[in-house]
Length: 355
Image (tube, rainbow, N blue to C red; front, side):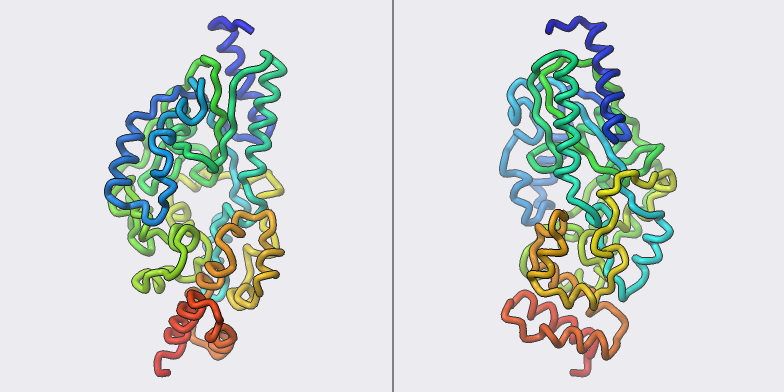
């Protein structure tokens, strides 16, 4: 179908309406010029701030030049979906309970990758019903895509000093997904930055991972340490990790803009297996088959059992000293896995330093 400018403007409006009908809270459209983001990414990579995340540089310029990743791309449809499963006051209280396991709220329910990708595919099919076949490809944090820079250019929000995307009406508790397309749709206005002089996210970071406004040293970030890093977690960060066993939401919890955050309407983002309130001891007692069963369909499963127990061991070491915690840790102090054994023994030393 040949589309004139009026057709394209009308189509853009239809796409946004269709996206919201599918459960996205906002849909924006942008071009593919990510040259500024490319410079920032290269500076970050050259400084070695990505740690062991070699995938961040593996694909070269495909990450910042959408047409190289998917030939023919000239526009990107960026969509966001709220995921906050509970009021932040409740999350705050749980985060401060040292015997409870704190798991980043985005991962409590079903793996968002599949859910959002399915919705993006549905959106693409609905567009095809209007105009016929067109070139597209859907992405949800699963390929070299600069999703935050794209969302900012598409007007969904601005990248805050903690590196998350912030929206004036919704805070930062949302997922992002993209459709790379070959349609010359009108583009939306880039979002303006509204962090001002606020440094709350920088000040609250337990490991001081935000080394400058808008610059995160992944090697210090608890999300990186508990999810991306394999093997031993540096001892200098273990105490600061507290009870965080998968990810960290501190910078989001403290952000003033998140007072406007909305609870999700998506049932699949609600907590499974009581992971929103589970105790550290309860989760530490899971064997590997139990871990695999209870994390089926969850983003948590990708870290594997070794990292799961490693992370919980550190949290138990940081818990108030008690005989119950010590006895729990001792069940794995001679584990055949050397990584688990190392972190359990560190935790026992924290619990009972006289031994």
